[in-house]
Image 1: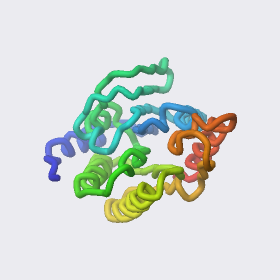
Image 2 (image 1 turned 45 degrees about the vertical axis):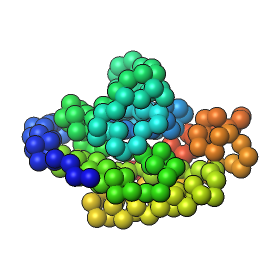
Image 3 (image 1 turned 180 degrees about the vertical axis):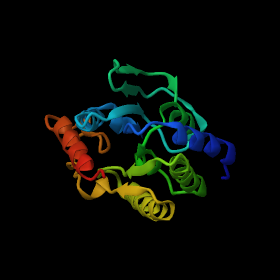
Length: 220
């Protein structure tokens, strides 16, 4: 898949050059960000007096943040100093437009879980690459938070490993720092749904917050 990048990236560069030196973090995420992981990561970053805008949409893949698709699996939106909001039915905002709106100094992309349910295609790869290029074109620091450990079936596990490898290759070629969450998280066997940490009985939110703290410790 090929995307028309020039006009979008030129706009991002303009906003980047006119922004102030104030540190601003923009975060986009799938359903992991709607729960304890997202709220804890936000809390930790805001402790440093850095402004955060966090958009988490359940079920999203990289392509959704390019096309702005409408999803109904729930979202959480948070901005420093403002009231957070949740809902069910809303179109996913395009990353290009979020960058132009918020003029971030760094962008954290927490995606990958929802592309492990099938064999990887060139469309998946080009979507990841597009998002990384969009951040770099805006002269913002690019960080990709890889999916955490999942407890999925044998066939899906093969595709999980494909996503890990793809993220490693693209993060190197596009200059986007990869945080390999799968290497320091552990989804308990026979508990929860194998994907979402918040639904693990008793200890789920604690595990999600621990994941967020480890991600935070790896931020530049």
